[in-house]
Length: 253
Image 1 (cartoon, helix red, strand yellow):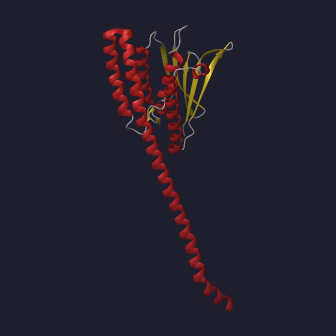
Image 2 (cartoon, helix red, strand yellow; image 1 turned 180 degrees about the horizontal axis):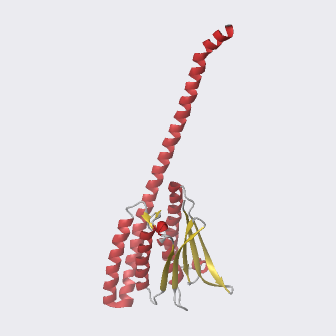
Image 3 (tube, rainbow, N blue to C red; image 1 turned 180 degrees about the vertical axis):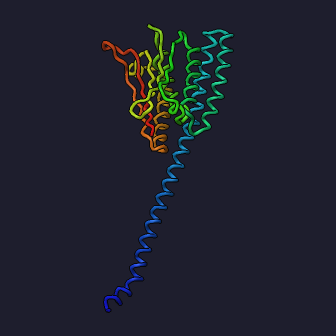
């Protein structure tokens, strides 16, 4: 009887301890949730800021190329180039208002962008875009202009300095190992050689485009719980650099 009485006396204490533990558990969980939401909001704002940075970066390079087109191509081709450029600029500003766009939309954008770059270069280069993906993966959402800086670097740093051979750019989309493989390959001067270019303009251009792309991939991975990765290497044949191969892997569930 004494044991029962003793137990009865301790019930309020035990109950209060349980309530404290439960309250602490939910309080901690709520704080963790609030902290995670805060981190997510910060990441989204950072992603938005990086998208905004892409606009002036792209517009500056696009407008900078108008002068060379006018000199090399003449008035008629310049007018055509400016018309194509205005459409691409509108497209650029529009897609960058979205957090994500479909891979299909990104590919359409890249096709227009490469066509414009091809027009301004002399001599021009050839290119191909191959999409070996099921329809469902072309609808996969990615941040807008995620691939564009890779293509831009291939053209400006790989193909543009070419003098001994015609340039060729290959952009391929493949489904491998539960990931979308985006392969950007050019037959330009090679990655290692392009890094040694002494032009100050090119150094600034490269550092900005590459830095923005890396940060956008990091934020995309954080917000989407993804493990997208990027790698780049020189293509070597007979101990000579004959181009660059860049690979962007975007895992999907």
